[in-house]
Image (cartoon, rainbow over the protein chains, first blue to last red):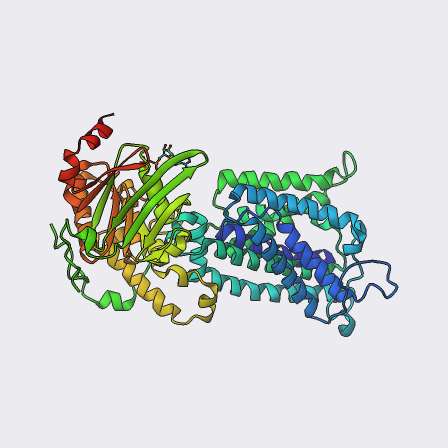
Length: 334
Length: 264
Ligand SMILES: Nc1ncnc2c1ncn2[C@@H]1O[C@H](COP(=O)(O)OP(=O)(O)O)[C@@H](O)[C@H]1O
Ligand SMILES: [Mg+2]
């Protein structure tokens, strides 16, 4: 039972990071990234191969760029990999020439193709079997029992989430975050107030990709394994539904979405007694998630915690100043 | 600082134009919407662009502002060829515009939209946001500027409304204010009076006049000829993608070709 709770809590942390990543790209900036899972996945693979060591040392798995880096380098490498992939794909796909709805479809196709390529090509990341035996951070040095290590990882991932949360809130509430929302609302109007919309899209896509890569790196360090089964393209939609249910452009809402959608409702069907054909109750997860999405649409279209309204306050200097027309030559021509 | 006073006839030769459009063409696929027009706007000058529906006025404005690519010709702003520059670059060079269908940031409050417009490029720079040099101060100044614009129009009560909550007239006001708040040197307006209550039109005209009096050039597409007559120093008439007449309102009103274009 303790293991179940601790594993769920680690998943909550991972899915919260995931929802924040997509919330930044979609909730704030309006980029529909249906290939989101690829960015988490490359983070996981790169963190795994940079922790596993060289594959030539007689190991049973094959992969590229193996290295044995100590904590926290695999996490950092995974984060950078997510960012680098986002930069590459962003520059190719997020161009003015491609309509946003086509961009979304292209991302989805990229995710499907990537999973296919990685599954069939064992030289990349050990093919369909995936990578395993990824060393867990500090597990060698701390000599904790299995249970205690799980709880250590809960604390570790929560601490990282808190750091990411404050960083995200800070940039989202800044003028930069406001520019993201302006771009999301109307990119033509945004460009006419001097915002380089193309560049801003790439920047936010890269930051979202970095967080996605980071979440994947953290997940693989916890699980110790990563294979194409873990990142089917539909996983992107779990994160999308989390963002929708929690409330777009609201980082606290994303936590609620991550808690409700994958962690609570997504795992519920697995507690049902096995019935129907084998695997039916596992597939019910998708029905439950779809139902959650539709329910949100009807009951709370803006999500559980909507974006909210910014209430402008006059600065003190302004309140004290006498209210008079500040520009002298006004309406002089009649 | 007083704006240079402009005699109507001599303004065409006196100084290099603020906006000079030469042989501009706009094509949509195989359709030629603008077929090589030439026009210019001087500092402090208000030029009307009129013509029947489908004449290519909006297309011309869109090519001037960088929203559609020009397939030929040049657009020169303040002596600089901007024909190939993206819209945001033209905005940074002092070109402001409004839209035939008024655009506002639907999911931002009016205040947020105005502050975003004042901050412009620096507000959207992650780097400048992170290093935070003068960020607080700039935000405060931008906020005060937004309040001033709202106060002047007597509309401070709409500051916290989302763009999508505005009435038609308020949308026009916000669309125009988003363009004006950065004090552009050149202002391009696409039918800004549509949807504005008739009682407010004189006030809007006065506002545009005072903007021009401070040196801003204005190119305005307008259907109501009485507005054109009251506001514009010069009028350019377009039909079927071509400029068919230019001159003062009285001159073009007497032009038989213009009458024919409007009657047909
Ligand atoms: N985005 C577009 N795609 C294709 N044709 C267009 C587009 N915009 C305008 N047109 C066509 O170009 C011509 C000029 O349109 P427009 O510039 O809107 O004229 P105006 O503003 O003078 O009414 C019209 O024939 C119109 O149908
Ligand atoms: Mg038009």
